[in-house]
Amino acid sequence: MEIGAAVASLDPDVPAATPEEATAKLQIDSLIFDHRDADGAFAGAAGSGAFRVTSWEAAGRATLAVLAANEEFREGRPFVDSIEITTGRAARERLVDLELNKADLTEIAPQDARRAAEQGVRISASQPDELLALVFVGGNAKADAVTKAASQANEQARRASAEPAMGQALSLAIDRVAIVNFILQKTGEAAGGLLPQWSSGTAFLFPAAAPSAGDLEHAKELWKQIAPSGALVLGYDSADPLEQSVAERIVVNAKEAGMSVRAQPIPGAGAQKSRGAAGQAPRVDMELVRWRMTSPLPGVTLKDFLTRIYSEFLASFGAAAFPEIASPEDIYKQQRVVLSTYRVVPLVWLPQVYGLSARVRDWKAPGPGENWPLADVWLDTETPTLTPTGVQ
Image (cartoon, rainbow, N blue to C red):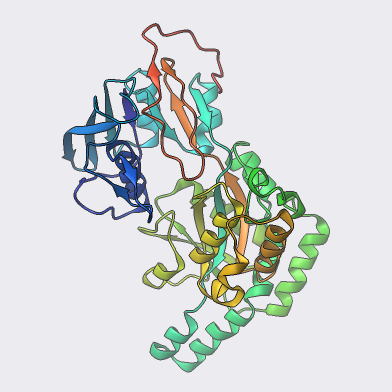
């Protein structure tokens, strides 16, 4: 079985440097280790899992890892004899590999899913479990005051105090429906809350419709009250085409509401970055982030997302405010409190999209906290003819 991936070169003995590399290491570790310990770390000897590493070759950004089935695996031998994982492949290269039967499984960017399906690629998508959101970068005014002129520090402090009004104005102006329909080609869902409907059951209570004329007028009024000097700077991952497209769309939406926003690429920004690393990036007022759910439980995901934003939330509300098992009413109230600060502005929910060859059987797109089920799939030796869409 051959797999194409988007991540950079990986050394199995070196910690991952980027979120993409961390994802690849997680998938491989889940295959070669027997279990996880109480802290969630992989435990047991390498090779005690469903597969063992037989070869690992790195050349520049590309890595070829070969895993062989573990005959002694306690849950039974995998169906496939071996797996070849090739990393460092661009999105277009991965699709070509799939079309030429050089790969059996590959990741596909959500915005490319519809086009790939129209070209006959067999598509498998998870439930929407990755949040693309806009987060205001707070807490830098004090640091700026130490190294900058007093007037600049005062401006930063003033912007921080106006942050809720800025966030509300942007939330009113951003056309989430257009982002889903045109940028994502209808692969995804507009997000008004911090949890998807399938997990929380309360997402419908947070509006995510296209902005009305009244919304734009309200945004203009808020912006006039704030009257910030200069444009707000929106940072996005320079290596993420989706974030770039969304950032550019937000700039257009803001202009339509009389607001001044400038998009700023941030080299080396991580898709799962936390607020703690923001000080090392170019100065921005807000950033686009992509956070994938780590659990289907709404309480766990909500606490995880808020920890990524800033720890003050947990200190203010208390850990007891985020039980792993909570009623829909509790989940709704917690989200409402957080969203009322406008520190975070949810935009869209993204699924994890995969392209499969026609011979892959028993594949199930993994959900939050799950890994690729490669130990359970098998390959059909007689390849059937797919329908034009090939959508699962």
